[in-house]
Length: 100
Image 1 (cartoon, rainbow, N blue to C red):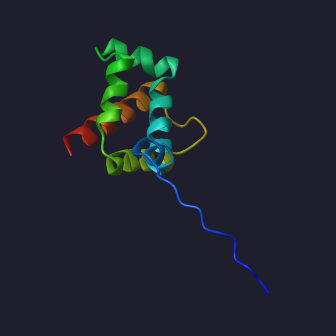
Image 2: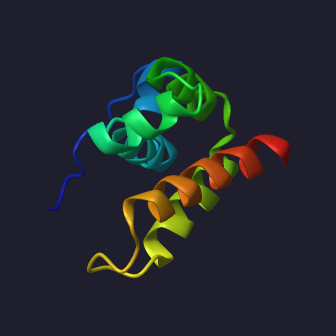
Image 3: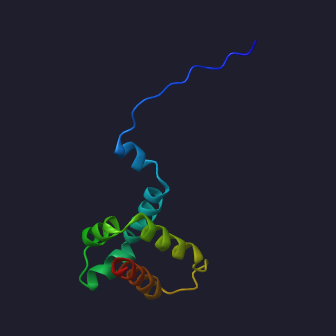
């Protein structure tokens, strides 16, 4: 005879559920990009502190973060863009996402 293992159930808090979401991983990826020294310096030169940039990323919806992270995945690899172009792309994407 085969016996099934007993089922175990428990409560999951909102924080635990949110921590395991794919959107959190994408949000962390975007925030890691904003934390790069060159990008942080460029944002500060334009009047946006790293904390403000992080707060703006936190304010994005999961769908906006997914779209932004998807745009990052579609960029060509291998350094085809200059540092200024990367900064412009990221800033533009954040601004567009905030406007949507």
